[in-house]
Length: 188
View (cartoon, rainbow, N blue to C red):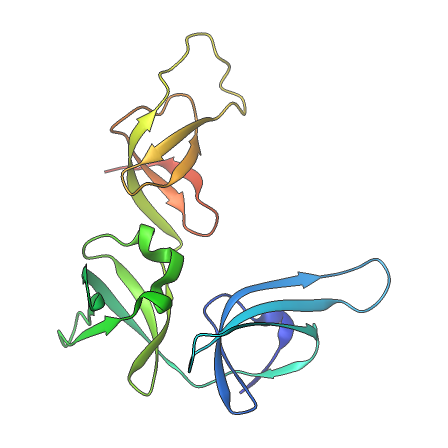
């Protein structure tokens, strides 16, 4: 299925000259003069080689047919990351290069989307927001204004997040997985 280059997003799978690539990053550039372009960093699925490609935003790119299925994260061991399909209880092992930097977000039982091509996991999409617990942060300073003054915090999964001054150690917060930004205090 052909799509325009500007619609490519992280996790999409494209077919270029019969080879499958998973999109790692996709950015659209609109210069003041000239043609808008889409810069895409991809990983070739067959051998893991990373490549960069630049297309005009209106160029057609062939998206590969992949199955997108929800799986729950179980555990990690020497073989890789193990996930289970919640309806059939079928388990699948995903390699380290497919999970990549997203491993810090994985929590027991977390639902993720795995993109499968011919039964093999080729890409993983996380939920946009996850709940984490603040493990370390600076104490509240009395009299500090609440307007746009954020302090650094380290979460239980090791991520550094900037949080508002009222957030303390042990507080559960919701963060955005795209840019590690604080969204809100968890309601649970």
